[in-house]
Amino acid sequence: FNNGEASVGGLGSARLAGNGTVVVSGGENQELTGKHIIVATGSSPRSVPGITVDHSRIITSDEAIHLKEVPGSIVIMGSGAVGVEFASIFNRFRSKVSVIELLPRLVPVEDDAVSAELARSFKKQGIVSLVGTQVTKAEVNGNSVTIDAQAADGKSQSITTDRAILAVGTARSTRYGYREASPDTLTAIAAIEGVCQRHGVPLAAVEAYARWTYEVGTRG
Image (cartoon, rainbow, N blue to C red):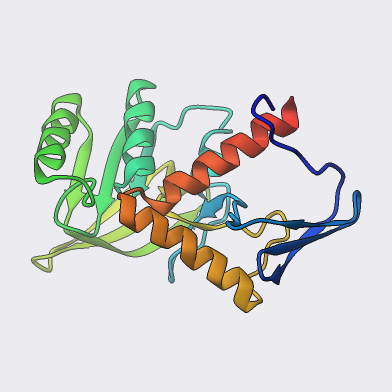
């Protein structure tokens, strides 16, 4: 740290005790106080009802970055930032890529012009975009995945692919032992979400940056 910051080392836990106080136990036991407290435990891929992630054929972004071989074909469920990034990556690796998005356009939280330009780019690259389409079933069959999808007009289709990525956003991570169990914790999270909303910053971006900072810091 170069700007007067301090770190609390050792393994342990931290608890929000109210009135701007954080109680640290294990490692260096102490109480920390501050006007503002940020809970930054990172994020984990979000799941959806009806789709079972087996971490082998139906995977998340966490498993996708560790694949040891390029799949011949891959279906990406969700076209947010993570989904379209992996669509571009695997397309460049020569996978046959299809993107399924429930809402009417790609990257639906972005401006219409961005979605339209990305759709044109994907089409030019040979990436299949199925927007306004719901995944009704995703099932692993040996070395492949069968995905049933239904368009807004009611037409259904079945897609067989080597792998599928569930990319429907992120949720706050509990991997470091964080639990939403106290009013103080919930208040802290609400405060962070409020700051993000006021400044137009997606909460996921803050969580991703915090996770990156944590990992870089722990790796030295």
